Image (cartoon, rainbow, N blue to C red; front, side, top):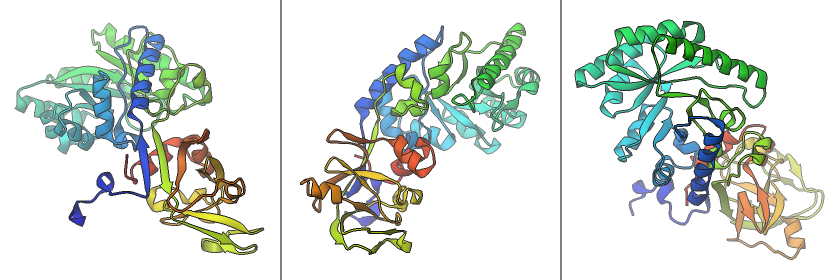
Amino acid sequence: MDSKTLNFETAIHPTTWCEIDLKALAHNFEQLQKLAVKNMSHASGIMPVIKADAYGHGMLRVAECLNECGCKYFGVSNTTEGITLRVAEFKQKILLFESTLVSEARDIVEYKLTPTVCAVEMAQALDHAAHQAGIQIPVHIKIDTGMGRLGINETQALDFVQTLRTECPNLILEGVYTHFPVADTDRDFTLGQMRRFRDIVYSLENQFITFSYVHAGNSMGLGDYKSDLFNLARPGIMLYGIYPQEDLKKRISLKPVMSVKARIIFVQTIAKGRGISYGHTFKAKEDITVAILPIGYSNGYLRSLSNKAFVLVAGMRCPVVGRVTMDQIIVDITAATLSGRIPRIGDEAVIMGVQKGEAIPVDDIAHWADTISYEILCSLGNRLPRA
């Protein structure tokens, strides 16, 4: 095989890899559908968020699995992701979360994508492109009720929607939505957002402007906030088996979809007093046995995990010692060796996942790295071959 054709997906016998459990993904999708029915009185279903290469899980594989589960709507970040799905012949509705550029209007129309609109200039460009194609296209309007990122300011929302209805006859006002920035930390603020957003939607209905889809619920919003206004949910992290808040484990049963594994490539004894890795930030207080695993920050295993993280070797939690390097980490396997479970070169270690009843969940890794599980999944999933 020409070396130029090798990539993460076709790597031969990788020594470090992600395993993606599509059965777990299908289970989570089913559970989220049930939760949506409970929390939205007239639910149209859920729109799984598969942006950022499905949070590192592989967008096309995830989309195929969800397609087989009967999924009708995908949420992605941008035009490139939407076109990728269309080229792969997915027929679902595809919502683009990003407010796109005027230069992308023709592609959006050509590939039958559903854009988010929160600027008049973009709406006009889409309307013109749709007119040239002789069709009407659906759009979703995003209203900023507190995120401070994308969206028409809530104080301008009514005028904005009226402008689109009057000046853009080739746009179908299919959906309206907002986003919750603190659903997991500030319930009062989130409930206030819901009330203000509801008032806007009702005011528009009084002007005979109605929407097929009204949505705001990300994973946390879906899991912890009931509403008779919303009829579509946008779960992201929970689709991949991760709980945005511990309390949600009482309401829904999810299964982690991604695990990360590596093979031991070297084992050696480190004498008492000897330093390990760059800067010698770890020095052995006694003779120890270490294993070298071929994963480092080039693979998305963050340098901030140095001297903090654990991996599973022979079913035991073993600490990462010394600084994480570009391609490798050093793991103290002394306890495993003393227990009689002597690790050898070629043995499988678990960076994230389960081994012999012990687990390293992504939330633990995120805690050690002082970040969130989203970053860990994307960092590892997007840089390792997937099995």
